[in-house]
Length: 390
Image (cartoon, rainbow, N blue to C red; front, side, top):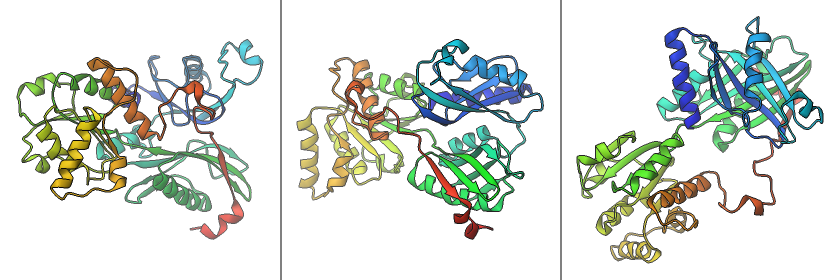
Protein backbone atom coordinates (compact mmCIF):
# COMPACT_ATOMS: atom_id res chain seq x y z
CA UNK A 1 0.00 0.00 0.00
CA UNK A 2 2.86 2.38 0.74
CA UNK A 3 4.18 1.58 -2.74
CA UNK A 4 0.90 2.75 -4.26
CA UNK A 5 0.97 5.93 -2.17
CA UNK A 6 4.45 6.69 -3.51
CA UNK A 7 3.27 6.04 -7.08
CA UNK A 8 0.28 8.34 -6.64
CA UNK A 9 2.47 11.08 -5.21
CA UNK A 10 4.95 10.78 -8.07
CA UNK A 11 2.15 10.86 -10.65
CA UNK A 12 0.78 14.07 -9.14
CA UNK A 13 4.24 15.60 -9.52
CA UNK A 14 4.30 14.49 -13.16
CA UNK A 15 0.93 16.15 -13.69
CA UNK A 16 2.16 19.35 -12.05
CA UNK A 17 5.29 19.40 -14.21
CA UNK A 18 3.44 18.31 -17.36
CA UNK A 19 5.86 15.39 -17.64
CA UNK A 20 4.71 12.30 -19.58
CA UNK A 21 4.38 9.18 -17.45
CA UNK A 22 3.91 5.48 -18.12
CA UNK A 23 2.38 2.77 -15.96
CA UNK A 24 3.37 -0.90 -15.95
CA UNK A 25 0.90 -3.33 -14.38
CA UNK A 26 1.21 -7.08 -13.95
CA UNK A 27 -2.02 -8.41 -15.46
CA UNK A 28 -1.43 -12.15 -15.41
CA UNK A 29 1.06 -14.69 -14.06
CA UNK A 30 1.62 -18.43 -14.32
CA UNK A 31 3.77 -20.46 -11.98
CA UNK A 32 6.13 -18.91 -9.44
CA UNK A 33 6.66 -15.15 -9.71
CA UNK A 34 7.99 -12.45 -7.40
CA UNK A 35 4.95 -10.16 -7.75
CA UNK A 36 1.31 -10.92 -8.40
CA UNK A 37 -1.33 -9.39 -10.70
CA UNK A 38 -2.04 -5.79 -9.76
CA UNK A 39 1.58 -4.90 -8.92
CA UNK A 40 2.47 -1.58 -10.52
CA UNK A 41 5.42 0.58 -11.51
CA UNK A 42 5.30 4.23 -12.58
CA UNK A 43 7.90 5.43 -15.09
CA UNK A 44 8.58 9.03 -16.01
CA UNK A 45 9.98 10.21 -19.29
CA UNK A 46 13.13 11.29 -17.43
CA UNK A 47 13.75 7.67 -16.39
CA UNK A 48 12.53 7.70 -12.78
CA UNK A 49 10.80 4.49 -11.66
CA UNK A 50 8.50 4.09 -8.64
CA UNK A 51 7.25 0.68 -7.53
CA UNK A 52 8.36 -2.83 -8.48
CA UNK A 53 6.97 -5.51 -10.76
CA UNK A 54 9.75 -8.02 -10.04
CA UNK A 55 12.72 -8.43 -7.77
CA UNK A 56 14.50 -5.78 -9.82
CA UNK A 57 15.19 -7.87 -12.94
CA UNK A 58 12.45 -6.72 -15.31
CA UNK A 59 12.10 -3.04 -14.50
CA UNK A 60 14.78 -1.67 -16.84
CA UNK A 61 13.57 -3.78 -19.76
CA UNK A 62 9.99 -2.61 -19.21
CA UNK A 63 11.18 0.99 -19.20
CA UNK A 64 12.97 0.44 -22.51
CA UNK A 65 9.66 -0.64 -24.04
CA UNK A 66 8.24 2.82 -23.27
CA UNK A 67 10.96 4.27 -25.52
CA UNK A 68 11.13 1.68 -28.29
CA UNK A 69 7.80 -0.14 -28.54
CA UNK A 70 5.19 2.54 -27.89
CA UNK A 71 5.86 5.12 -30.58
CA UNK A 72 2.15 5.28 -31.42
CA UNK A 73 1.22 5.73 -27.76
CA UNK A 74 -1.00 2.63 -27.66
CA UNK A 75 -0.87 0.21 -24.69
CA UNK A 76 1.13 -2.97 -25.14
CA UNK A 77 1.50 -6.23 -23.22
CA UNK A 78 4.96 -7.76 -22.77
CA UNK A 79 5.37 -11.40 -21.72
CA UNK A 80 8.37 -12.61 -19.71
CA UNK A 81 8.71 -16.39 -19.66
CA UNK A 82 11.20 -17.45 -17.00
CA UNK A 83 10.40 -21.15 -17.38
CA UNK A 84 12.55 -21.46 -20.51
CA UNK A 85 16.27 -22.19 -20.49
CA UNK A 86 16.73 -19.14 -22.71
CA UNK A 87 15.86 -16.98 -19.71
CA UNK A 88 19.49 -17.09 -18.62
CA UNK A 89 20.63 -16.17 -22.12
CA UNK A 90 18.24 -13.20 -22.16
CA UNK A 91 19.98 -11.92 -19.07
CA UNK A 92 17.07 -12.01 -16.65
CA UNK A 93 18.02 -15.20 -14.83
CA UNK A 94 15.07 -14.86 -12.49
CA UNK A 95 14.94 -18.50 -11.50
CA UNK A 96 11.28 -18.12 -10.51
CA UNK A 97 9.99 -20.65 -13.05
CA UNK A 98 7.00 -18.53 -14.02
CA UNK A 99 5.43 -16.40 -16.73
CA UNK A 100 4.64 -12.72 -16.21
CA UNK A 101 2.48 -10.57 -18.48
CA UNK A 102 2.93 -6.80 -18.08
CA UNK A 103 0.60 -4.14 -19.47
CA UNK A 104 2.46 -0.92 -20.29
CA UNK A 105 0.46 2.22 -21.02
CA UNK A 106 0.99 5.94 -21.32
CA UNK A 107 -1.11 7.77 -18.74
CA UNK A 108 -3.63 10.35 -19.91
CA UNK A 109 -4.42 12.80 -17.11
CA UNK A 110 -7.73 13.73 -18.77
CA UNK A 111 -8.93 10.15 -19.08
CA UNK A 112 -11.62 9.27 -16.47
CA UNK A 113 -10.49 5.64 -16.81
CA UNK A 114 -6.89 6.47 -15.85
CA UNK A 115 -6.18 3.69 -13.30
CA UNK A 116 -4.17 5.92 -10.97
CA UNK A 117 -6.98 8.48 -10.87
CA UNK A 118 -9.39 5.66 -9.96
CA UNK A 119 -7.08 4.34 -7.24
CA UNK A 120 -6.63 7.85 -5.83
CA UNK A 121 -10.40 8.30 -5.73
CA UNK A 122 -10.84 5.00 -3.85
CA UNK A 123 -8.22 6.12 -1.34
CA UNK A 124 -9.75 9.58 -0.86
CA UNK A 125 -13.30 8.24 -0.51
CA UNK A 126 -12.18 5.35 1.70
CA UNK A 127 -14.24 3.00 -0.45
CA UNK A 128 -13.19 -0.08 -2.47
CA UNK A 129 -13.66 -0.25 -6.21
CA UNK A 130 -13.12 -2.53 -9.20
CA UNK A 131 -10.89 -1.95 -12.23
CA UNK A 132 -11.46 -4.44 -15.06
CA UNK A 133 -8.69 -4.12 -17.66
CA UNK A 134 -8.52 -5.80 -21.06
CA UNK A 135 -5.01 -7.17 -21.66
CA UNK A 136 -5.45 -9.62 -24.54
CA UNK A 137 -7.77 -9.61 -27.55
CA UNK A 138 -8.09 -12.19 -30.31
CA UNK A 139 -10.39 -11.89 -33.32
CA UNK A 140 -12.60 -9.06 -32.00
CA UNK A 141 -12.40 -5.71 -33.77
CA UNK A 142 -14.32 -3.49 -31.33
CA UNK A 143 -12.34 -4.32 -28.18
CA UNK A 144 -8.78 -3.12 -27.59
CA UNK A 145 -5.99 -3.83 -25.12
CA UNK A 146 -6.04 -1.28 -22.31
CA UNK A 147 -9.80 -0.64 -22.38
CA UNK A 148 -11.50 -0.70 -19.00
CA UNK A 149 -14.63 -0.98 -16.96
CA UNK A 150 -14.89 0.58 -13.49
CA UNK A 151 -17.34 -0.26 -10.73
CA UNK A 152 -17.68 1.44 -7.33
CA UNK A 153 -19.58 0.49 -4.18
CA UNK A 154 -22.61 2.53 -5.33
CA UNK A 155 -22.80 0.27 -8.43
CA UNK A 156 -21.85 3.16 -10.70
CA UNK A 157 -20.22 1.88 -13.90
CA UNK A 158 -17.82 3.70 -16.22
CA UNK A 159 -16.50 1.95 -19.32
CA UNK A 160 -15.04 2.51 -22.78
CA UNK A 161 -15.67 -1.07 -23.93
CA UNK A 162 -17.94 -1.08 -26.97
CA UNK A 163 -18.91 -4.78 -26.96
CA UNK A 164 -22.27 -4.90 -25.07
CA UNK A 165 -22.19 -8.62 -24.21
CA UNK A 166 -18.69 -8.29 -22.79
CA UNK A 167 -19.67 -5.18 -20.83
CA UNK A 168 -22.65 -6.96 -19.29
CA UNK A 169 -20.53 -9.94 -18.30
CA UNK A 170 -17.84 -7.70 -16.82
CA UNK A 171 -20.38 -5.83 -14.72
CA UNK A 172 -21.63 -9.13 -13.32
CA UNK A 173 -18.13 -10.43 -12.58
CA UNK A 174 -17.02 -7.07 -11.15
CA UNK A 175 -19.93 -7.16 -8.72
CA UNK A 176 -18.90 -10.67 -7.65
CA UNK A 177 -15.28 -9.54 -7.17
CA UNK A 178 -16.42 -6.59 -5.07
CA UNK A 179 -18.59 -8.85 -2.93
CA UNK A 180 -15.94 -11.56 -2.53
CA UNK A 181 -13.11 -9.03 -2.14
CA UNK A 182 -10.91 -10.95 -4.55
CA UNK A 183 -8.98 -10.29 -7.73
CA UNK A 184 -9.52 -12.56 -10.72
CA UNK A 185 -8.26 -13.11 -14.26
CA UNK A 186 -11.06 -13.96 -16.68
CA UNK A 187 -11.20 -15.11 -20.30
CA UNK A 188 -14.37 -14.32 -22.27
CA UNK A 189 -14.97 -16.50 -25.31
CA UNK A 190 -17.15 -14.50 -27.68
CA UNK A 191 -18.52 -15.75 -30.99
CA UNK A 192 -15.82 -13.97 -32.99
CA UNK A 193 -12.88 -14.41 -30.64
CA UNK A 194 -11.72 -14.05 -27.04
CA UNK A 195 -10.82 -11.34 -24.54
CA UNK A 196 -8.64 -11.67 -21.40
CA UNK A 197 -9.43 -9.30 -18.54
CA UNK A 198 -7.84 -8.59 -15.16
CA UNK A 199 -10.62 -7.81 -12.66
CA UNK A 200 -8.86 -6.03 -9.85
CA UNK A 201 -10.09 -5.08 -6.40
CA UNK A 202 -8.80 -1.70 -5.21
CA UNK A 203 -8.83 -1.44 -1.44
CA UNK A 204 -8.38 1.83 0.47
CA UNK A 205 -5.59 1.92 3.07
CA UNK A 206 -6.02 -0.15 6.25
CA UNK A 207 -7.58 1.95 9.01
CA UNK A 208 -5.52 1.37 12.16
CA UNK A 209 -6.58 2.95 15.46
CA UNK A 210 -3.99 2.78 18.24
CA UNK A 211 -5.43 3.43 21.69
CA UNK A 212 -2.53 4.62 23.80
CA UNK A 213 0.20 7.16 23.23
CA UNK A 214 3.16 5.74 25.13
CA UNK A 215 6.63 5.36 23.68
CA UNK A 216 5.95 1.69 22.90
CA UNK A 217 3.14 2.74 20.54
CA UNK A 218 5.56 4.77 18.40
CA UNK A 219 7.15 1.82 16.52
CA UNK A 220 3.70 0.30 15.95
CA UNK A 221 2.61 3.54 14.26
CA UNK A 222 5.86 3.73 12.31
CA UNK A 223 5.62 0.15 11.01
CA UNK A 224 2.00 0.74 10.01
CA UNK A 225 2.86 3.94 8.13
CA UNK A 226 5.69 2.11 6.34
CA UNK A 227 3.02 -0.28 5.05
CA UNK A 228 0.90 2.62 3.86
CA UNK A 229 -1.82 2.22 6.51
CA UNK A 230 -3.92 5.12 7.76
CA UNK A 231 -3.00 5.57 11.44
CA UNK A 232 -5.10 7.24 14.12
CA UNK A 233 -3.73 7.71 17.65
CA UNK A 234 -6.20 7.98 20.54
CA UNK A 235 -4.76 9.38 23.76
CA UNK A 236 -7.12 9.09 26.74
CA UNK A 237 -4.73 11.21 28.79
CA UNK A 238 -5.29 14.13 26.40
CA UNK A 239 -1.64 15.19 26.42
CA UNK A 240 -0.64 17.87 23.90
CA UNK A 241 2.82 16.28 23.67
CA UNK A 242 1.20 13.33 21.90
CA UNK A 243 0.79 15.31 18.68
CA UNK A 244 4.52 15.92 18.49
CA UNK A 245 5.44 12.34 19.42
CA UNK A 246 3.16 10.94 16.72
CA UNK A 247 3.84 13.44 13.97
CA UNK A 248 3.84 10.53 11.49
CA UNK A 249 0.19 9.68 12.29
CA UNK A 250 -2.66 10.74 10.02
CA UNK A 251 -4.81 11.78 12.97
CA UNK A 252 -4.33 12.28 16.72
CA UNK A 253 -7.39 12.34 18.98
CA UNK A 254 -6.98 13.72 22.51
CA UNK A 255 -9.80 12.33 24.61
CA UNK A 256 -11.02 10.89 27.90
CA UNK A 257 -12.56 7.49 28.37
CA UNK A 258 -15.97 8.92 29.32
CA UNK A 259 -16.37 10.75 25.98
CA UNK A 260 -14.39 8.40 23.76
CA UNK A 261 -17.48 6.82 22.20
CA UNK A 262 -18.42 10.22 20.75
CA UNK A 263 -15.04 10.79 19.10
CA UNK A 264 -14.21 7.62 17.21
CA UNK A 265 -15.84 5.83 14.31
CA UNK A 266 -15.38 2.08 13.87
CA UNK A 267 -16.45 0.03 10.86
CA UNK A 268 -15.71 -3.41 9.37
CA UNK A 269 -12.38 -2.18 7.93
CA UNK A 270 -11.08 -0.92 11.27
CA UNK A 271 -8.08 -2.51 12.94
CA UNK A 272 -7.77 -1.61 16.63
CA UNK A 273 -4.72 -1.97 18.86
CA UNK A 274 -5.13 -1.17 22.55
CA UNK A 275 -1.99 -0.36 24.53
CA UNK A 276 -3.01 2.30 27.06
CA UNK A 277 -1.42 0.55 30.09
CA UNK A 278 -4.52 1.66 32.03
CA UNK A 279 -7.02 -1.00 33.05
CA UNK A 280 -10.05 1.29 33.40
CA UNK A 281 -9.35 2.89 30.02
CA UNK A 282 -9.06 -0.55 28.45
CA UNK A 283 -12.37 -1.63 29.99
CA UNK A 284 -14.23 1.31 28.47
CA UNK A 285 -12.48 0.82 25.13
CA UNK A 286 -13.44 -2.87 25.12
CA UNK A 287 -17.08 -1.89 25.71
CA UNK A 288 -16.92 0.15 22.50
CA UNK A 289 -14.89 -2.23 20.36
CA UNK A 290 -16.23 -5.68 21.20
CA UNK A 291 -19.77 -5.11 19.83
CA UNK A 292 -18.42 -3.08 16.90
CA UNK A 293 -17.82 -4.51 13.39
CA UNK A 294 -14.04 -3.95 13.69
CA UNK A 295 -12.10 -6.68 11.90
CA UNK A 296 -9.34 -7.04 14.47
CA UNK A 297 -9.08 -6.12 18.18
CA UNK A 298 -5.69 -6.46 19.83
CA UNK A 299 -5.08 -5.86 23.53
CA UNK A 300 -1.59 -5.52 24.97
CA UNK A 301 -0.94 -7.39 28.20
CA UNK A 302 -0.96 -10.93 29.59
CA UNK A 303 -3.78 -13.36 28.98
CA UNK A 304 -5.16 -13.21 32.51
CA UNK A 305 -5.59 -9.42 32.12
CA UNK A 306 -7.74 -9.88 29.00
CA UNK A 307 -9.76 -12.57 30.78
CA UNK A 308 -10.36 -10.21 33.72
CA UNK A 309 -11.57 -7.50 31.32
CA UNK A 310 -14.11 -9.97 29.92
CA UNK A 311 -15.17 -11.05 33.40
CA UNK A 312 -15.79 -7.42 34.36
CA UNK A 313 -17.95 -6.98 31.28
CA UNK A 314 -20.02 -10.00 32.28
CA UNK A 315 -20.34 -8.57 35.80
CA UNK A 316 -21.89 -5.47 34.23
CA UNK A 317 -24.24 -7.78 32.28
CA UNK A 318 -22.56 -6.91 28.98
CA UNK A 319 -22.74 -10.03 26.87
CA UNK A 320 -20.55 -10.94 23.91
CA UNK A 321 -20.66 -13.66 21.31
CA UNK A 322 -18.12 -16.29 20.29
CA UNK A 323 -17.82 -14.52 16.94
CA UNK A 324 -16.87 -11.29 18.70
CA UNK A 325 -14.30 -13.13 20.81
CA UNK A 326 -12.74 -14.57 17.63
CA UNK A 327 -11.74 -11.03 16.66
CA UNK A 328 -10.19 -10.37 20.06
CA UNK A 329 -6.44 -11.01 20.32
CA UNK A 330 -5.06 -10.82 23.81
CA UNK A 331 -2.20 -11.15 24.31
CA UNK A 332 -1.58 -9.35 21.03
CA UNK A 333 1.01 -10.40 18.46
CA UNK A 334 2.66 -13.56 17.16
CA UNK A 335 5.23 -15.53 19.12
CA UNK A 336 8.64 -14.34 17.91
CA UNK A 337 10.22 -13.90 21.35
CA UNK A 338 9.73 -10.12 21.26
CA UNK A 339 10.98 -8.23 24.31
CA UNK A 340 11.72 -4.71 23.04
CA UNK A 341 9.23 -2.06 21.85
CA UNK A 342 10.40 -2.49 18.26
CA UNK A 343 10.22 -6.30 18.32
CA UNK A 344 6.81 -6.19 20.02
CA UNK A 345 5.60 -3.77 17.36
CA UNK A 346 6.86 -6.14 14.65
CA UNK A 347 4.99 -8.99 16.32
CA UNK A 348 1.78 -6.94 16.44
CA UNK A 349 1.93 -5.75 12.83
CA UNK A 350 2.81 -9.26 11.62
CA UNK A 351 -0.23 -10.73 13.37
CA UNK A 352 -2.51 -8.08 11.87
CA UNK A 353 -1.13 -8.80 8.40
CA UNK A 354 -1.75 -12.52 8.93
CA UNK A 355 -5.35 -11.87 9.99
CA UNK A 356 -5.98 -9.59 7.01
CA UNK A 357 -4.72 -12.24 4.59
CA UNK A 358 -6.25 -15.22 6.44
CA UNK A 359 -2.86 -16.80 7.09
CA UNK A 360 -1.63 -18.70 10.15
CA UNK A 361 1.69 -16.81 10.47
CA UNK A 362 3.77 -19.99 10.51
CA UNK A 363 7.12 -20.72 8.88
CA UNK A 364 6.97 -20.68 5.08
CA UNK A 365 9.29 -23.69 4.96
CA UNK A 366 6.54 -25.72 6.67
CA UNK A 367 3.89 -24.64 4.17
CA UNK A 368 2.84 -27.39 1.76
CA UNK A 369 0.67 -25.12 -0.42
CA UNK A 370 2.11 -22.42 -2.70
CA UNK A 371 2.99 -19.15 -0.97
CA UNK A 372 0.54 -17.28 -3.19
CA UNK A 373 -2.90 -18.37 -4.27
CA UNK A 374 -2.79 -19.97 -7.69
CA UNK A 375 -3.86 -17.61 -10.45
CA UNK A 376 -6.69 -19.60 -11.99
CA UNK A 377 -8.24 -18.18 -15.16
CA UNK A 378 -12.01 -18.35 -15.33
CA UNK A 379 -13.38 -18.88 -18.85
CA UNK A 380 -16.87 -17.76 -19.87
CA UNK A 381 -18.27 -18.64 -23.30
CA UNK A 382 -20.30 -16.28 -25.45
CA UNK A 383 -23.31 -18.59 -25.37
CA UNK A 384 -23.54 -17.82 -21.68
CA UNK A 385 -23.33 -14.09 -22.40
CA UNK A 386 -25.99 -13.79 -25.08
CA UNK A 387 -28.78 -13.44 -22.55
CA UNK A 388 -26.84 -10.65 -20.82
CA UNK A 389 -26.68 -8.36 -23.83
CA UNK A 390 -27.75 -4.78 -23.14
